[in-house]
Length: 227
Ligand SMILES: Cc1cc2nc3c(=O)[nH]c(=O)nc-3n(C[C@H](O)[C@H](O)[C@H](O)COP(=O)(O)O)c2cc1C
Image (cartoon, rainbow, N blue to C red; front, side, top):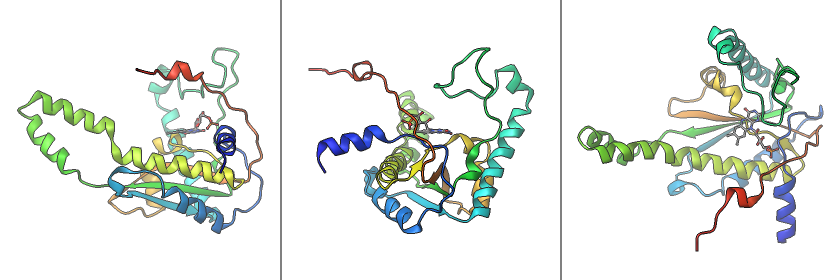
């Protein structure tokens, strides 16, 4: 692949939140997931796991669980007190801003990929937890360990690859954690996710019915060269 083609692929991928009513071939999704597993990942432990969901009832059950969780949270008085769910950055803020949509379009997705991260005990964390009781430096290192979180970084690398491949094969998807924030446990029950795994991302997928534009900060705002 020429650099120009790679540049185009990366720049033109957008989060897609509206889909054509057209089934997504299983083989395409399997192919995309297989390629995603070539992402770099901590110690090549390959802690990711992908649920490809094509069954409409399961998609609906997940969408309903996410909506129920959101509705429940929306009803808390604390939500009114602290301003409710945040709006996406691209939506104008303030009194004239349109009301945030009540219903997430997840149930309309022709397919979903739910991404799991297998749990793995890190012996170094055991060392740090024990040592942190008597050593401030170890306590600090224990905090760093949770910030560095190689498990989530690794699975995230796989998701980033997955989204690029989906885009390359003409599919539109959005990497989502929001819907899981209030429904992770319910979604895991629906999928019968085993004890040793967490669902960490929900990715609705389909043929795009939307062509959003993207925006990024200039690179010199987010990068510095030290020489
Ligand atoms: C970790 C993560 C969580 C995200 N969660 C959501 C989400 O819950 N809902 C949503 O609509 N988009 C979600 N997104 C998509 C981002 O909003 C999107 O990537 C960003 O606005 C940039 O737009 P682009 O992907 O079109 O370039 C998430 C993205 C990431 C990486």
